[in-house]
Length: 388
Ligand SMILES: Cc1ncc(COP(=O)(O)O)c(C=O)c1O
Image (cartoon, rainbow, N blue to C red):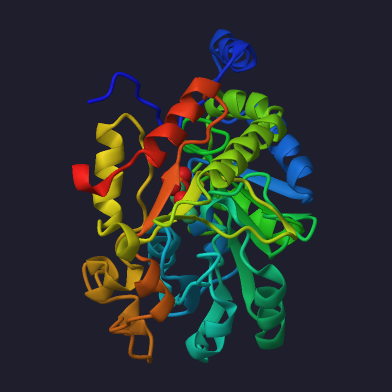
């Protein structure tokens, strides 16, 4: 193991977060309260939506978003096949059926040219994911949704502060979902938030996160306990103030890595469209497996041995995950059994199959010192497959 170890993600917390948390501890009021309210106002303002509803995590955000649009048992939601699992498990938790689309070969986000194939009479929504912080092609996706009267739920769990043609992600579709898990661009420890301009949806979301209660006495809908505590809100409200500078630094580091590693045949920086602001959740690169003669996993393991931690995700297409491939729903085949369509997920989508297993994310978090970045560059430039 090398002497230096550069980590791929680190939460960056300072005096403002500590001060806010102390204030909550001193107040003795930990449940959803004034800090969460302030966090919601700031986040809505940042994203540019009328409402932001804080919840316990990003997965809960997606689940509540799906319920808030009125998803019915057996309704279908089109999702990309290469993303974190909960984009699609959240659909099943709401008794919906995920339908797996291919990814754009250059952007790794949902391929809008595959939407037509995925469309059925049961389709209710499309859920693009702004993967690794690069916005999906929202103009085309939104146009398709408008034509077919579908909802658009943005999974922006990896894309805080990203923008598509000048518009912040989370404000483009009907609803946007963010995660504030510890490794994200900003964090609350665990946490999530849902953004929307739709007043009625926001009202439903506020009830859903708190037992479906309209007031202390009435459970008017099937709700959950998915509130965010004020301790998490206290961290979040301070983190929002730092997002712009964090993302600026992520971008500088990511662009430097791309420029300084550009001539390597075996490692290609991910494409960035000139009409987006990338949030650079990691600095994404594609390992050219044929060039280097090593799998993405082997490159990831070797770099870790040499003191450079990278992310190596997503290595199994969602349509091959047993939970979906074997229809493992509510201890039965429900919700698939509530749907007249055959969804055996016997898929082999060309772009997914081409990319799967070859992505790595290099460290780019704002806590990195310039020696760390130089070490990453030197280590990767000196990387020799013969030594592995
Ligand atoms: C694309 C995507 N969607 C959803 C989630 C779920 O967020 P959480 O971990 O906060 O539940 C994540 C988190 O890792 C994610 O990366």
